[in-house]
Structure formats: C-alpha cells, structure tokens
Length: 150
Image (cartoon, rainbow, N blue to C red; front, side, top):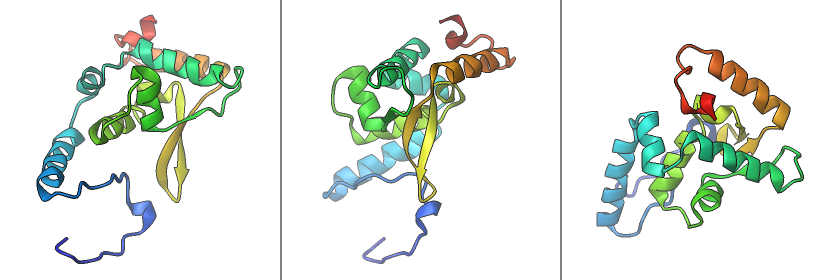
C-alpha cells in the first residue's frame, strides 16, 4: 500500500488477518496466503489434519458445552484449539475459516456474519444436522465422502 489508505466497505472484505511488523515476514505470509486461496478441500483437510469424523466430534463438543443446545459459536482460532489443543497460526486460522465454509462443514455449522463478514460458525442442533447430513449424502457428488460413512 506504500503508506496509502484505502476506503473499503467492511462488507467487501471477506477475510482479514493481522500483518507481521517485518517486511520479510509480511511477504512470506502474503505468499502463503496467495497459495492457500486455491487449496482444494482434500488438501485443506490434510494440512489441518481434520477428518470428517473429527469435524463431527468438534460439533458434538461444541454442542455438549451448552447441554445439547445449539448456539455454540466457534471461530477458526477456537476450532483449532478445540481440535488440536494449541493456538492457531495465522495460516491455520485462514485454512480453518475456508474449511468451515465448505459444504461438509455446513452440515454441522452455519455462518455467523457481522457487517457482511463471516466472523464465526454456530453449531446446529442435532435434528438439523441429521437432516443436513442426509441431504449431503444423497448428493451424487458427496456419496463417496467419508462423512457419509461416519
């Protein structure tokens, strides 16, 4: 940006992350971010080490915390901490954000938006998950997905 300021509407921003202070680290993060944008779903799952079974377990844990009630919101950071028990790096947060927007993740979570930007993912109630999973597995594109065998 070379010191210039831009006026961009909040709803036009899909994702934002803090920029490292040093130019070298900032460029490295930018390059990782660019390559991560085109990452296919299978590669996302592998790089995050999140299987469909683990995604379902995370949903169960999120709903368990509220005694089976829905409305358990997860951010990409809290999802990584829940699943892997460590703080998420900037790239892990972005990859998790992408994963949680997938059709498979929408079986368990819905997007929560603030000013048009996705800020969290809310765990759905069990009945909604059962119905969404049934519909997801009926789709010919998903019939070989591991989620349909869990």
